Image 1 (cartoon, rainbow, N blue to C red):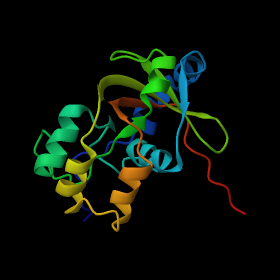
Image 2 (cartoon, rainbow, N blue to C red):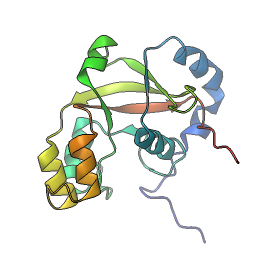
Image 3 (cartoon, rainbow, N blue to C red):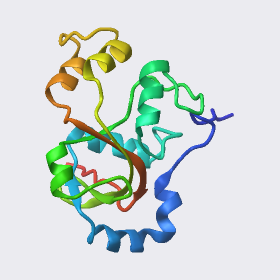
Length: 172
């Protein structure tokens, strides 16, 4: 007997979005875009392939706050670490990204469009509070806290994603 997916339903966005993949591919080429970091690429791939079920995108401010303060998604599903897309506010301003915008997310290795994000939330996180509540202390000796303090950009962008292409993995 197979285990049920976390949250009860496997959210495989590749299968969900396959019927409209050609339209998404064409749209992705017309939208403003950001190139993901390696960490963001990993998070996106896990969202798209269902590894982060029941998520269908990056945490909105409501979801982020619920996870940081209560270790649960707003629906009550256990979730202990926020999954956010951090982008510099200067980049968002340059691209004119606001709530309601659509944004192409590109692979940092080959610049292929991977997904389209429908922006539903733009917010600044309290890094010290996130570190303390999620990781137990605001101590840079913890690698995740060090990452928060030195690599995280100032604005978190939340919203649902639609799968355009799967990241390529090459055998060497």
